[in-house]
Amino acid sequence: MGVIVGKKTAKRAVQRNYMKRTMRELFRREQQGLGAVDILVRPLKAYARSDFVAVQTEFKTLLEKLHRRSGDA
Image (spheres, rainbow, N blue to C red):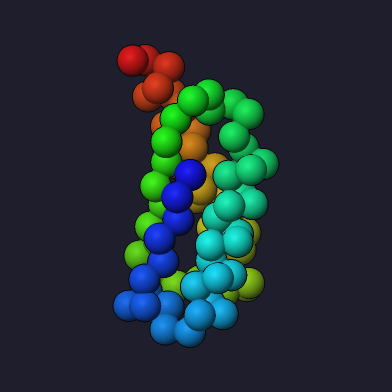
């Protein structure tokens, strides 16, 4: 999995690194059900710790959608 967070999304390196760490951790928790896939994540809006639950549910939803699509192929 690759994570790209540009300076236009989050100005400060601390914010960009937090976003990358959380995405990697969320992926680590859910990867056993995916199989062998390459994923590139590029958040379009910055988020903070207060938004973590919303980001977590959206990420899980997207991974479930990906899992269903890869199962169909």
